[in-house]
Length: 282
Image (tube, rainbow, N blue to C red; front, side, top):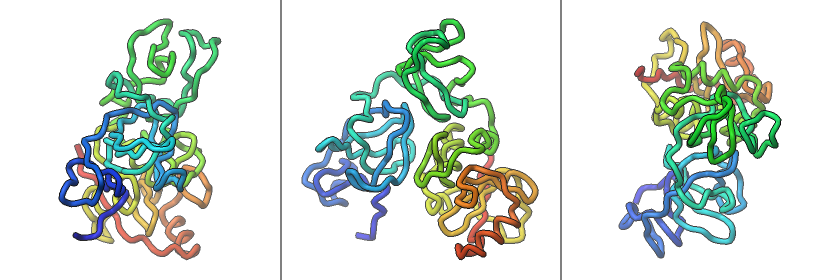
C-alpha cells in the first residue's frame, strides 16, 4: 500500500472508518457518529494532547470514531481532516442543521435578547449556528442570543469574493494551525472564506497547492483572488502587487506588497515563490 497522509486518514490502529476496510489495519471498523463542535474554537490535534494541526469552529460537523480518556478521534466533514479534539468540545449529538454563519469578525452570544444581558461565549467569524427565533434584533441559537447584524444565512455570507471575506480578518494575530478570528495562519485564511462560500478547500497549504484551482505560468498576470505559494506558505492576491496573508513577519493578517514579500521571505531563508494558482470561477 502506498504511503497515506495521516491528516486525512481516519484510522489509528484501534479503530478506522468503515470505508477503509481492506485498506487500513484496525481492530474495529465503524461508520462513526455524527456530532458538532460546541465550543467557540477546538484544536484538532495530531495525537491526544499533542500539537495542534488545525482548528474547528462552533457548529462544525465531525464524524466521531472513538472516545477515549477525554479525547475524541474525529474526521472533519468539511475537508476530511482527521485528528483528536477534546471530548468536552463536542455537542454530544449532531443537533439541528446550522442555518447561519457568523460574518462579523467576532461576536458575543448573550443569555437573553438584550445587549446588557450576560454574555455566554465569544464566537469567531465562520462559526455556524441554528437560528430558532428572532427578538429585538437578536437571534436565538444554541450558543445564545446573537445580534442580527452579525449573522448571514448559510450560502450567503455577504460577499462572493473570498478575498473580501478574508479581509474581515485584517489584524488577526498569527497562530500556527489557527482557523479563527482569535488566531489564524496562512492556510486558515484561505480555507475559511472558501468554505463559507460553499467551496471545498483542504486545510494545509501543501494540500491547497496541489488541489486548488489551476497552475499559472510564471509570467502570467495575477488577478485578485489568485493564490501565491512559497514552501509552507500561501497568500491571497488582493490587487496589483498586493497580497493579503497571515504571516510571521507582522505576526498578523496584513496586506503586503508582493515584490516586497518575495524579497523578504527569500532573504529570511524560506525560498522563492514555488507556485501560483487561479481558482476556478463560479
